[in-house]
Length: 437
Ligand code: GDP
Ligand code: GDP
Image 1 (cartoon, rainbow, N blue to C red):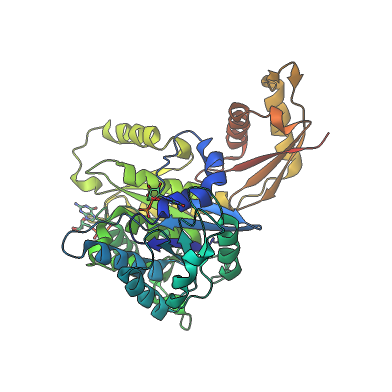
Image 2 (cartoon, rainbow, N blue to C red):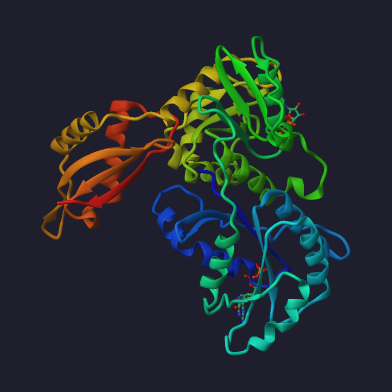
């Protein structure tokens, strides 16, 4: 299920990042368990009343010039209007209503997007008089919150999930593989799209009628149907903020949520930087199938070891994604391009793979026999049985006598054994431990 995106917009210093951390606080701890995931605080995943959503703090998009604050907050608003499903517009009770608040409110108002107005720094909830002036913005009841004290956050979450849209996943047939290309600006995403579509025996289809047409490109190759997600977004150019990291992450979030398979495009000429990791980390957290595409391979000085060396570099940087295959190619010369779609097809199959319970239990029993779970304070975890409860991504539940006894390293061991037996190449696997004695 695609998660809706919530963006926080507001002047510098109103407390956006403080509230962002409050919103994703609980979930963050879970994700931090996984070694190698960069905690960049650019995006986070939250859930309230069983409704999951992604949050992004659009602050910190910096530009130069006069009126910097107003310009940058206008950009945030514009970006949020384009990319988010719900916008949290944040003001500050301590500084009161300002002129830039009013200007941005007008932009947001005209967009017709669902808006939640939050007034931060209401540190004393008794002092409701602090929020009255914000009624004039026209977004209904302002929600008083305090990032410092953590008060009002529940009310804010209630207001967000109340207007969160249901995103439908069935905009394309089940047998269509939805592919997103993500990566920093200039790694060659749009060149790669053009190269794929220009390939021999690729039939670009025009399914008329849906609004998605304008931004997605459906095509067929060797009897398999694909759709490239948000190709229009990739071609878009020119706005000042389009080169900023937050912008590319935010664009990527949407595409990733709608995709089955995510192509993480890396510039082979430049190597890997942190920004590549932020985007890849999101694909991992969203539970999508992934592969690395090392592009511009034509301009890399190569000998017989270069590919292996780059391979190692990727593995070192993306410890959480050892399952993702790597394809080296050149969008420009089209060399090795023919290798790409077969890998996309393969990882899509693995992402949708369902393993029979008895086979899964055989593998886990063997794994336990070779390497029994460690004891904790004299108690040993007993695994009763294991079953796969979902696909996309494959999700496995391990029933044990006491879930507290499951350790990350043992879970990792089981995952490796399961991968060894059933492949699951290119897809994350979710493992949950539940009590059943
Ligand atoms: P951002 O620039 O909008 O992301 O704002 P920050 O989250 O960085 O916060 C700006 C400043 O406001 C920091 O010094 C915070 O400690 C402070 N701040 C955040 N929330 C509150 C609050 O609820 N009450 C008060 N008094 N200060 C706050
Ligand atoms: P995007 O911003 O990720 O969509 O990147 P573009 O597709 O616009 O490519 C950025 C630049 O890299 C352009 O000048 C392309 O011509 C160039 N480029 C893209 N793919 C390749 C490649 O495989 N080899 C070389 N040498 N240049 C490439």
